[in-house]
Length: 323
Length: 304
Image 1 (cartoon, chains in turn red, green):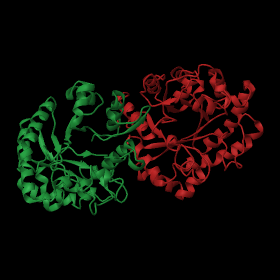
Image 2 (cartoon, chains in turn orange, red; image 1 turned 180 degrees about the vertical axis):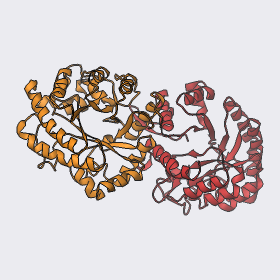
Image 3 (cartoon, each protein chain N blue to C red; image 1 turned 90 degrees about the vertical axis):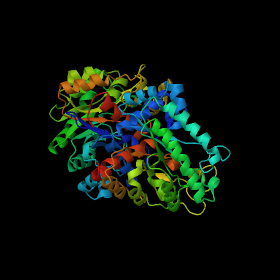
Image 4 (cartoon, rainbow over the protein chains, first blue to last red; image 1 turned 45 degrees about the horizontal axis):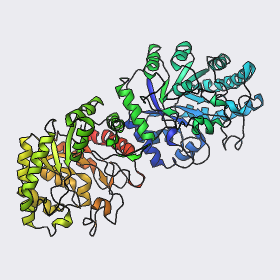
């Protein structure tokens, strides 16, 4: 996209299951699709194991030999580089002590989590990316409410990782999601206050904010100085009954319909009855000359190619972004 | 081109299922960088029923950023009893069909009306020079009618139609009037029929009025071209004949094709077709994007 904002596309929706997005030609088709839609930069999402050869840093390097080998692979499809990579240290990974369950809310886990971050930091620096985007805390239903002390503990580990990313020339962006134990506006702001603005930023996901009950436009306007990364997507629903606290909310709420038969939470830009004020949000980014990456996602939607094309159309024809 | 399937709450549907699916289709075509669409002629009933006619439908096309409808494909259901170009006694029916058809389309500007110029192979064999000559006479007359509406009559040779081999193609074009009968080169169809589309195009470039750019990995063998109702679907050797440009092991030399297009200074439209792209796990959306990627990054480097 030829614009003053920098647009990238997330590959997460293509990699929906362990072994469906492994062959290099399948990955090339996804990359060419993204390229044809006008995006020359991608966001990766972390994974685990030998099948995640476009998700797990060590496995990517095994497949492509080096950072430059991986970039050459992207550039065969005319994708020039990587903006960012998403990582959730709460998600068990084979490479992280053999699927150890650790939490940023537990100070005893911090040393290990800092170690786990290092392959991502090294990889992102090696491919010239800019942001490590992280899930700052696990799901709310899995633990008691955090309180101010709990949020400070979480801030501590991200400050340590922020030092690592900063030393490597990267940003660290905490990605709010609608299931996280940091859920309310006050909790999110408390987490930002518990972290160092020089090294830790916020990844603002417009749909996740909206589902979680936070107005993304208003929050951005109030905290623009802390927002270093954006995920742009829409939703038709908000969590209207503390559904994020449902046991097993990943399955019962996001996949199971929250008892309301909601089949899908995340939608492409321009969806009918979308709750996100996308033009308003993008206008706010422009007002502040937002310098970070704005990443479009086909997250848990439908056909990833179709959604990438619909998102591209929206950018071009509703937001006036030149391809 | 018109072929499309997507999955939704109603299961697999084509773009004509609803205004919503049509909108999604048009957005996807435009988003990747295509500028116009082709349709099948039989869609005109949906244009009237769902949109108020071709002009109203074209307004919707334009609302999505596309320029217009360029070509319509007149997919006639040939029948040797009353509608078969190699049978002169059926010609008046064919001519009357085009008088009516062109009137229906006259409210918009079309470049071409595309036809498969012969019946299915099994309804025309043995293919003789006389039959080809009768066929050419038919299309000369049809071409005069379409020209009266400002639209070129152009011929698209499926590998399973009666005129598809190189000698028969040459005979057919030697008997047709280049003022009234043009050639529409479908790269995959010619390859399947063992005709080199590049050489064929170079020989007839002066009368080529359009292209379907798509690839194939297979050449028809044995009696592949003789299966009812349609060899594209029923030929026993090959489950999926068509692939998007740039497919591995594709038989069409698109770089040579585009070089020939450049050398001949062609300035018309090139249509990309995803015929049955959803077979064997394929996906129309992805094929559209991959084709456009190929056109931009390979073909436009040769000639834009």
